[in-house]
Amino acid sequence: MKRKPKIYVIKLNRKILYSMIFIFLIIIGLVVLKNSKASKIFNYRRAKQTIVIDPGHGGIDGGTGDRKDILEKDINLDIGIKLKKELLVEGFNVIMTREKDESLEDLSDINSSRYRRDLNARQTIINDNEPLVFISIHVNSSKNSSARGVKIYHFPDSEEGKKLADSIAKSVDLHIYERLLKDNSLISEVLTENFYILRETKYTGVLVEAGFITNIEDNRLLKDEKYKEKLAFAIKKGILEYLK
Image (cartoon, rainbow, N blue to C red; front, side, top):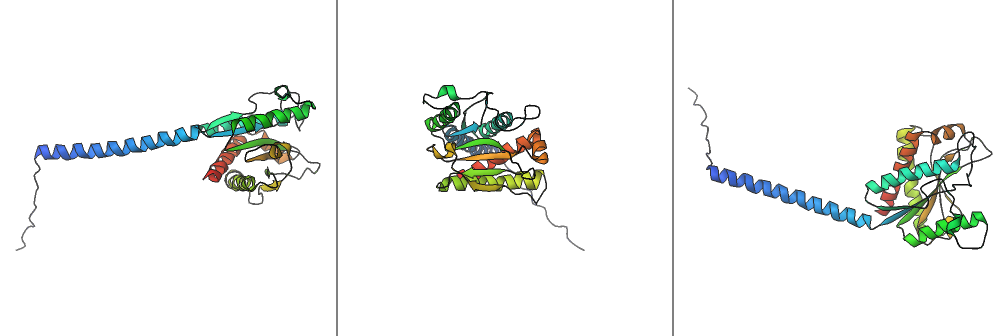
């Protein structure tokens, strides 16, 4: 005849049990508090770090495009505002060269053309705010209607500019072309250019061309809110990866 296995029951004193539970809760509380403090410190440090967003053109200067269709200045501002929201969520201090439909020549005191004074004002805003990075947002155009895609420009002699451009390009390829559009034939391009905004500023920055307004498919995407939101998200992810 098989013997039934003995079952041992450990009886804990209520006071000991309550003490163990109390200690366990204290440990959990300390871990949560530590993580919370670390998060606050992290966000505080980021809040002290500035990123400047420069939506190109504005006001009298519509940029490329057609007033009967879409204008570059409006697309630039829309993407810029979306990028600002993305970066604020990450805890950064975000400065925009413009947050409405305006040109900036009146903010410059140099004696030059309206166009050059507008650029000078943007340069001053960037330099005065000493950003970690700055992003100038534009839209491309071409006589070749088949030309399309996101282009990221950095100043030729800027190693950090190239790193930032490469990081944003990889992020755009992943979040826009691979995940959103599911089109492996498209790829963003990193280029060098002697643009005023890249040459005359003291801080690391890139100029992002969000697409070709002269291309049927890019034109459609530049009117699409989901595309612009995802592009802003991709640019943010690229910035974060670069800052690591």
